[in-house]
Amino acid sequence: MAVTVQLYAGGNLLALMLGIPVYQAVAVLTIALLAAIPLIYSLISGLEASVITDFVQLIIIILSLIIIIPWIIVLTGADAILAGLRGIEMNTLNIFDPGLAFSLGIVTAIGLISGAISDQQYWQRGFAIKKGHLKKAFIFGALAFGIVPIALGLLGFLGANPELAITLPEGIDASMIGVIVVSKLLPLWASILFVVMLLSALSSTIDSGLNAGASLYATDVMKYNKEEKNLMLRF
Picture 1 (cartoon, rainbow, N blue to C red):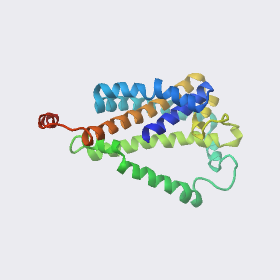
Picture 2: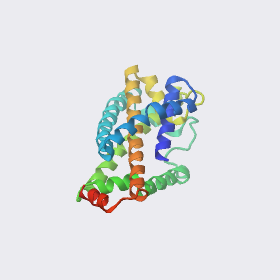
Picture 3: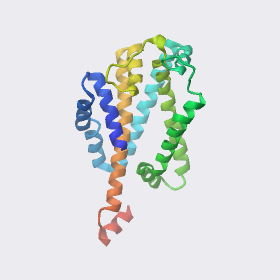
Picture 4: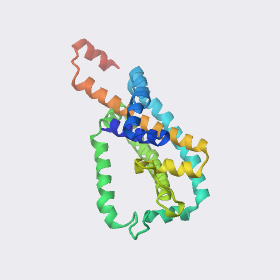
């Protein structure tokens, strides 16, 4: 499911960039980019390749956010972000309304927290971390990850500000609003940087999913003789 969601999100991104139907974009992206490239380097060195590329991708994401988000805030002002808290319709409902929290916020939070417990990607990394470093690794990882949705959420508020007149093309998912906001407010090179950042984030989850699936297969499906088991335990 994690891999499929990333491919669909990448397909929406490609559909927006090239102006082609989403199902065609997902097919192209699956074969040519988001599936093929992570699969190649995952096959070369498995989890090690995933960890190394994740670190590089995290640097790309953080640097992109440091450049793009403050730049947009300077251009639009904090008032434009606050104006988007009530949504496009400018009604009384905002993100702090209890009705929204109970209908969407809490439900989403429970799903995400449950994913951290049930997802094989987290277990695989948990067992791969050196003894004594587990708590620090997950605390740092949570903080580093938290920066991303908070920063990108600001673009969503700008997209919901009716005064900016930012609209999504027909057939494009609302998750692409950040790309639209950046392309409207910043020059082309900034939009390219933003797209590269998004592809890095998608690729990071895909290779993690591929490795997690492979570990389940290697552990629970493959049959090993005694010599092979002893060899694996040595490493």
